[in-house]
Image 1 (spheres, rainbow, N blue to C red):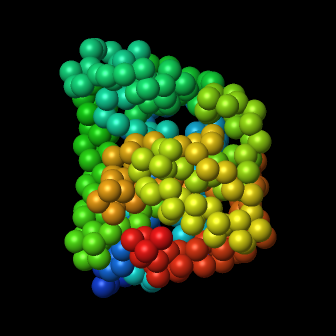
Image 2 (cartoon, rainbow, N blue to C red):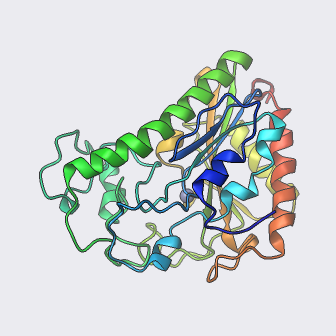
Length: 305
Ligand SMILES: [Zn+2]
């Protein structure tokens, strides 16, 4: 396996090979699967678009990535798992946000679309972490300019729309074929929360955090099952703290219809040096743990839990 974090997009797209009927674009990699498991990685993209126009140090932007999460799960398509991956970076557009989470202070004109409807929807915008980020995790501004409305709309059309279409299509296909779907929204987290990253700055994270928005996006039984599997491999796992899951589980999880969506955060210290972003010796062991977990998930019927 190669670990070059800046592999060109063409190579990533070309790596899928024949036999998958998913769709790929310059911005999203989508491999349709055959089983009831859907994995998506919204934050591991490293293809920084030419029109980004940011003003801050690129290395700071790279710390916002869930670096290597795509590669940790590289075994998934061969198990028949549906796979969706953002190739664009999270700091360009955060696919794990709703379209109303617009930070108007970034724009050179009023936003013509929907505005946040509640304080909860404003929470991420206040942190500088709306659909388009204003601040890095360390609280530094990303831009020294205002963004045009057209520019933001273009990012939505090129990144958010195809990403969510791919996730929705895979979830519907899995549900149609099997009568249920097990969707894992895949992330990684720093070992310690940065000053502007979350509502819990300075918090030392456990090995894994499972989130299902307080049992509203998956059954509690499935969340407990997932935690137990990971604890069984010797890891510390927290449930719904400090991460409950955001837009990608909120939007697709409907446990009453056997559509289960959970967020899984992996502590980056398990697999990489957080300063250099290079994978370390723990990468392969962690990948083995994840493969074992996903194989068990593929064999699981959540209606029997
Ligand atoms: Zn993430």
